[in-house]
Picture 1 (cartoon, rainbow, N blue to C red):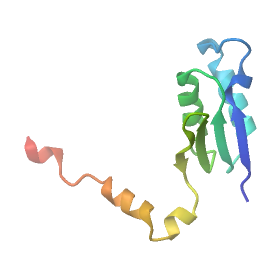
Picture 2: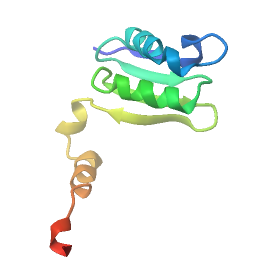
Picture 3: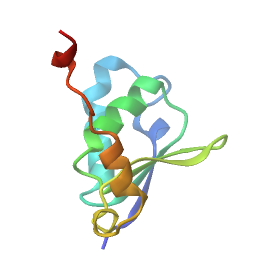
Picture 4: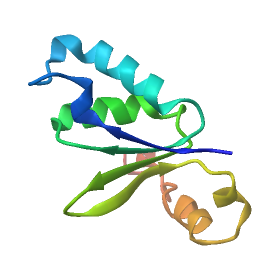
Length: 107
């Protein structure tokens, strides 16, 4: 069973996030996230840190959510097995994202 983990990205650094400390931030975020959990990223942080943490958690978190006071929760990815067992919207979206033509046909 997965647990919901909320990571406030601003706790990963002191005053200002620094690129030179990025590996340290990513390691802390992975430790906080654990394996197979639902993870919520929130807090004041630079966009580059959100992007790098989201990338680092792909394959580690079952579900990743971005939380903003303006937008609310936005699902970034969801690898829950139940999404692939139903015949709902997810399967249709996957089929729609497949290319319908070959680029080589135009060369």
